[in-house]
Length: 156
Image: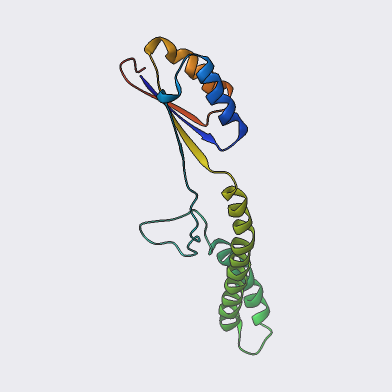
C-alpha cells in the first residue's frame, strides 16, 4: 500500500513524520519530496491557451459605460455634440479603468505572490501494510495534510 500526502513546509510536517515512525513504519518506507516555487513573473495578458483568471478590462469596461453616458449627456451643451463626447468619455473611462486595474495587479497581486512564495509544498509518500493504512491516514489528517491519496490493493 502506498499513501500520498501533501503538506505545507511547516512544523506539522516534522511532527507527522515522527508520529508515522512511532506508529511502526521505518524511515526507509517514507519518501519526502519538497516542491520548488516558481520564480517567473506572471503574464499580464492572457492567451487563448492560458488564462489566470485576472481580467484587466472589467473595470475599464464599466468606467467606459459610466463616462460615455455622462459625457454624452453633457455633450448636448458642448460644441462637438453628444456622439463625439460619448466616444471621448468611453475612451477616457476605459483607459482610466485599465490603468487602475493594471496598478492594482502589479502592486497587490505581486505582494500576495511574495507571501505565497515563503512556504512551499511537500509531497510525502508512505509505503505501509494494509492494516497500517488506517493509522497512517488518521495521523496525516491529525497533522493537517492538504490532501491524501492511496494507491495499492485496498483502494476505496
